[in-house]
Image (cartoon, rainbow, N blue to C red; front, side, top):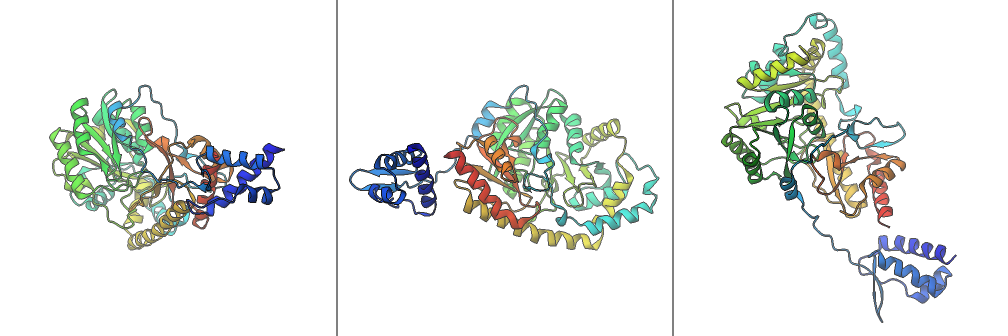
Amino acid sequence: MSDDSSSRIVAELRKWMATAQPGAKLPSTRELVAEHGASPVTVQKALRTLASRGLVESRPGVGTFVRSVRVARPSDFGWQTAALGSPKNSRPTLSTAMRPAPNDVIALHSGYPCRELLPERLVRSAFTRAARSDAVIDRPATAGVPELQAWFATELGTAVPGDVVIFPGSQSGLSAIFRALVGAGRPLLMESPTYWGAIVAAAQVGVQAVPIPSGPDGPDPDQLARAFERTGARAFYAQPNYANPTGVQWSSRLAEEVLDTVRRHGAFLIEDDWARDLGITTDPVPVAARDEDGHVVYLRSLTKTVSPSVRIAGIIARGPARERILADTQSEAVYVSGMLQAVALEVVTQPAWRTYLRDLRKQLAARRDLLAEAVREHVPGAHLDVPAGGLNLWVRLPDTTDLPALVRDCETAGVVVAPGDEWFPAEPTGRFLRLNYAGPNPGAYPQVARLIGEALISRSA
């Protein structure tokens, strides 16, 4: 009974402390005995429990006080990423982001926008028109429908249609690039953390991923240069605009420094511009727009903003690199569905497309800010930078967090979140969650943050 009473007092005091200021004085032992109807021994046991958890501090002759929590800057172990490299025999599995979620949960784990953020009317109309065209019968060219090639080239601004190869989504494009330009057993530099799909593609191709630590401003050019020299790599995979998962956008200066480093080492920058249409407070400028010598192989997908069912991506490459990528394409899929290409072209060339993108920007901004504010308010010890675009918040949790247990607890409470470990090509350098603010039911975001916070507190209790 004493243990039960002590636990009850601990729980009640923790509730009181949750709203108290750091340094606030707890009621005296005599007051707690009277309030809880417990013995002094039981009250003292409860106070010792709180002290052992670092929640209170006792000052002899003065009283017991809520401990002032020092909000420390999270430890930065990113340098170890470069020093240790990628582990051997790494076999990444399918990401949590691809898991289907039951209808009765709040899902923040997906890598896609929810249905109400997509241009559904445009897509349905495009399918209707494409069904009446020759696209349902004709075989398209291996490199893609010329009009769609021209659209991708015009969007970049520094390419011609003949530079473009159309792919059935960016994932197949990444695999083709890694096979054609890197090759099995050879090193590929990639940001860490980075897109889980790139990690999986590299593993499946047999490429040796070499992690380059990437912080709030992007990768360190000096680390990148040393990695090129140490490994002899000839390619660097990166997401300069609204990186998945971190949301980082490179500065113009960093883009120039990285491109100079790539040129100096006679290498390729594989630029994944997955979020080209997802800018919120800034407008993305591809690094490829600065390149005239074929050092940048540029990949842009339409899947996130047109429809997950319209898996269309364009790769822009020049010279022999393009020919190798095209040859790999022919060996894998021969050509991409002409029907899907026609639908994608119809959607992005409609005047309503630009209107849709402007409205999408406003909706993403509101959802991002709502979720970020809720996380800051309800998740103790969380650190995050609000991204200027993309779909995700990258939330760092206290280093002592049991991440797998936290994810399980959240799912039990009805919230599906993605553990950050899956976005590191080597060992993770902290405890992270990736939260998609473009998911369904944004009105539940404050509730979601409270549930995450409660699960975090219960695991630290």
